[in-house]
Each structure stands twice: as structure tokens, then as C-alpha cells.
Image (cartoon, rainbow, N blue to C red; front, side, top):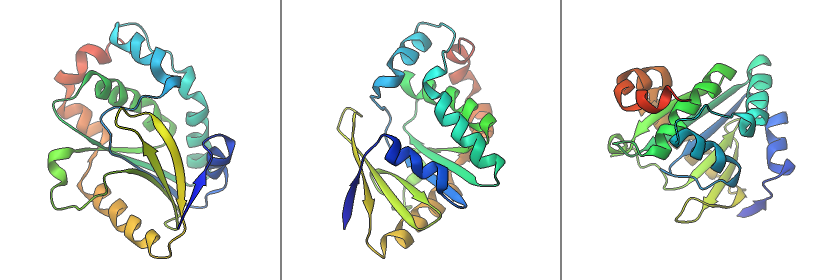
Length: 186
């Protein structure tokens, strides 16, 4: 059974009380999030990155990491990287500096992993929140999944994604040339 979760403080409040771990699987190559539109345009124009749109998230990650809690993310990406994915990946540097474990999983490496085709959060290995987006990457809503078997299924997907993904620093080093041109502007 799925229950809608509002994206405002209701959803963000989860990050203030989860106990041990928060894991995010991202499956899209583009997210059409209004709050980052200006930052994307500045990045593509080669202008310095304005990170104010992500400050609240980075504060939550710092607080979690400082309290001994783990925040992890795996982003499944298509290669070669689009301009938007270059923006995302170079921006993840801030997440990593705040204490988030970010990993990149090339889409071609997902064969046999049986990962879902949708984004989700898994909190403390028990609470599942599925993120819904339209075909253009616009956020439609989130749903908490209350099915007792869901946590085990999503936990297995988390473990498979983490095991196959490339740690952020290594991915950036291996794709330096592809990222370098736009990264120097951010």
C-alpha cells in the first residue's frame, strides 16, 4: 500500500529523525527541478556556481554525518554524459564535502542488477519513499510504501546499486576530461 508524502517540510523532516542511514537511488538523466534552473543555466554559461539552492540540503547532510548517521546516493547515468549530468556530477562535490557518500553507476553496468526504473529513498533499511517524476523529469510526488516486503526488496536494490557503483572521487578522476571543461566554471 502506498501513501502520498508531501514534498515540503513533511518529507524533509524525515531527514531530521532517521536513525542510522538514508539511501537514495536516482535513475533519471535529467531532473526538471524549478529550484535549480538558474544554477543549471549559469553552469552551462560557464559562470560561477551559485549553490544557495542546495544550502538547506547540505546543512542536513552535515548534521546527519556529524551525528554519525550515513547518507548515501547512487545516480544511474547514461554515458556519454549530457550537459545536465555534468552539472549534477560536478555539483555532487559539495554533497561529498558535506559527508554524503555519492556513487555513480553507468547505466550499461546495471545489466543483471534488476534495479527498479524509479527513484526511491530507503531510511534505516525499513522505510521506503518512492519518488515519482514525469517523462521530462518534473517531480510529481512521493509515496511512502507500507508493504511489509518492500523494505527487503528495496534494501536488496540498495545493496546491488552500492556494490556496482563507482565512488564519486574515482568516477570524477576517470571522467576528468569529460567533466573538466565545465567543472572549472563551477
